[in-house]
Length: 189
Image 1 (cartoon, one colour):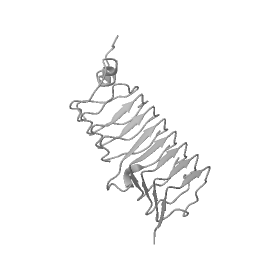
Image 2 (image 1 turned 60 degrees about the vertical axis):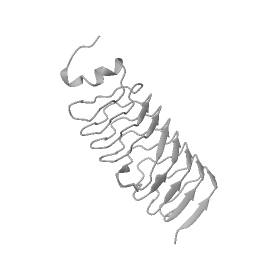
Image 3 (image 1 turned 180 degrees about the horizontal axis):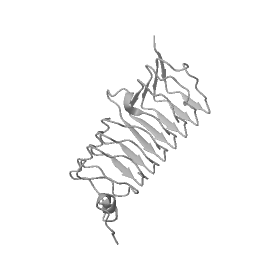
Image 4 (image 1 turned 120 degrees about the vertical axis):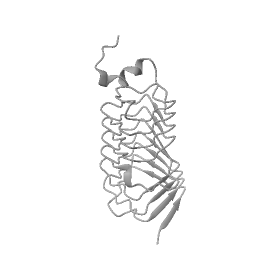
């Protein structure tokens, strides 16, 4: 039987492996909490806010994120592929998402703001309508990615092959064009 927790604030909490299994959290705030050792099986977060939380290397299998905001959180090496895809929605601000995996993940209209996204796997993902506002995409992998109407105008350090991805109406600046032409080994001044 699932525990239902609503309107609770957590600050500085360290959650252990099976501590929150089968819990539903609605309109809760988590500040400076550590989730790196948690088993997220059957856990749902609805309208929750996470500030400066640690998810590094966490196994977020079968967790639901419904209208969740992450600010200043560390998701290093997290695999998002197995999260519950029903009604999920999340936004990331000032987060570290280095080496995360969104392989074949459908995450339309997702906001990434001021995030470090080094070597993120977006292969076969659908990021249509998403925004990468001032995000470092160094060595992130875009192959067979659907990025139609995606805003890369302030993203930097990306390499995206337009022939291997869907980029219809994606937004780039003139400066960002070099990230689209990398494979041609051109010198752009």
